[in-house]
Image 1 (cartoon, protein in one colour):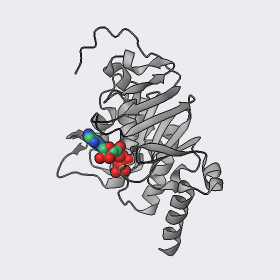
Image 2: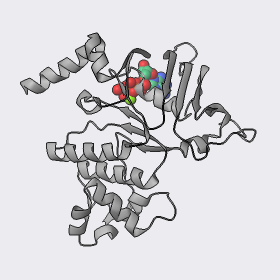
Image 3: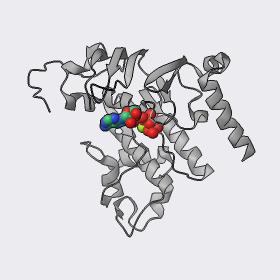
Image 4: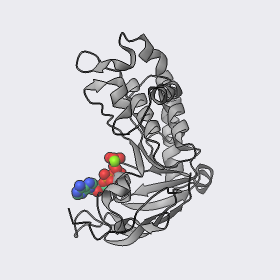
Length: 259
Ligand SMILES: Nc1ncnc2c1ncn2[C@@H]1O[C@H](COP(=O)(O)OP(=O)(O)OP(=O)(O)O)[C@@H](O)[C@H]1O
Ligand SMILES: [Mg+2]
């Protein structure tokens, strides 16, 4: 990791505007993954990134969070180039709900508060009511103080709801959601979806979506293939275009209809 002492720019109280300008990137110099990506995201917008496996969705998130540096072009948050900002300050702007939900050995409360300081019991309960976990937690013998370990575990759906509650508590201005693909039952899926919608409300959000049905309301959908954004627009616009997205959407819809 390079020394970042000379980086004087800071992100503070940001609105959540994100600009990608002619971003070019490859993990190795021989193989460019992102060729020329530009997009302008307004504060509070929901951006969906879709596309087949290996298309470059996670790579975009890696660049946004500065896990990697762009080869050329620029990413700006509220007009400030992220390359001028120390990494920790960039990371502090993001809440994340990732595919592989992770919890540590500790109480439910500790897992939800995670690294945030000054969180009251009331805040924790409020978040759990919002995601629909409160009643379940109340049925546990130790409630919010129940220790999660090999003996006391949670279902996949409950784990997802926990990480959403955690992101609510964190209350970061920017959000990255990597939609879970694990099969939870329909009712749980609806709960997770509802909780995710509450979380993205009024927050600039990047959603890596696997089921296209969940991102129909996105302000902008970026369709990626082989490292490039091949189509972009709203759900309606992309369907009307009748291109790659429309094919993808229709094929998912047909599978659902037949099942
Ligand atoms: N750390 C890495 N080093 C080298 N190449 C990588 C690395 N991570 C990903 N790639 C390559 O970059 C390309 C884009 O990968 P990426 O992980 O962004 O795809 P994705 O769209 O997120 O796919 P998935 O839907 O499977 O998660 C792929 O060709 C992949 O092999
Ligand atoms: Mg990925």
